[in-house]
Length: 352
Image 1 (cartoon, rainbow, N blue to C red):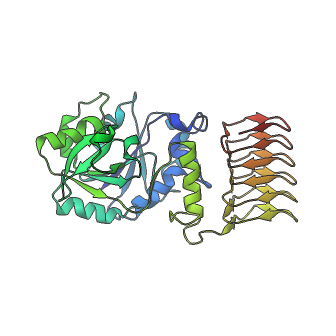
Image 2 (cartoon, one colour):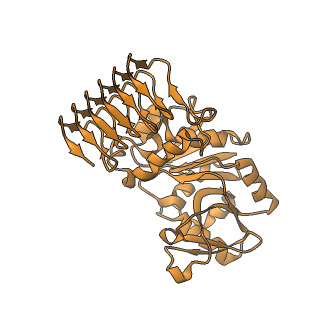
Image 3 (cartoon, one colour):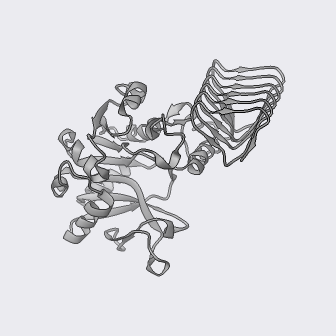
């Protein structure tokens, strides 16, 4: 069985973080995001290969992920000549599929039980199975309506309040049968959400839903990306490195914590990082590889990507900071600040 990760998007909502780092490899703690998706796929022993469907900066992903040895499953790279949409990307991967296929959108963090999902798909003799997630504000999304027996009966994109009859949205996880891909025109931009799935409903094909009531999050915005870290830190999502230690302080081997520095859990300090004397790392903070936090600096819930340097006395409160940034002494950055790679912040700057 193959799994397809639809990872060809530009990551527009996460800019400037994704200008140089495609969304599949944005770090979650000190691992590329797609490794967390592969962790879930590995729980289904039938899956023997992951197909990465790419378009945006594929070489950067290939350089970091390689053949998949570090992720635990072999990886095949399929690079679209141009963006083909979610359905077109699946069609482009079709020559490499050998039967029932699991598909993930490239920005979904979840702990779903895939074995149970595939079992449901087979028990119902489904041509397609879609995972739905209940949300508090369905008006922000397209909702998916189901019959009492779990059949999908209607898709409603961005519904008006009087059209909302359920609170379940497309969670971006599917089990599909490739013999249904004949309706997808090759080499053409095509949406699985707006065209393929509605065609199943219109033709009366067996199309069922699973409502996932466990952990699920789309990490595609800075706020959601930050929240995903908090969910792992605090144990709402069981994922490395906090799967067995929610709420803990994790300091990786090779990190240097100088005398007088204070760490308050939950927080994470990656290999090669240096926390200088008098610095305080507060709850929710993520310190990336080879980051330097200066004397008496305060990091309160911020996420610092690798090789960033925080000057003496600087204060970082829930900011997200890209690779190799330089934060001047006594600067103060707040929750609305998201810095792209190689940004320079002058001493005593206040923002956010």
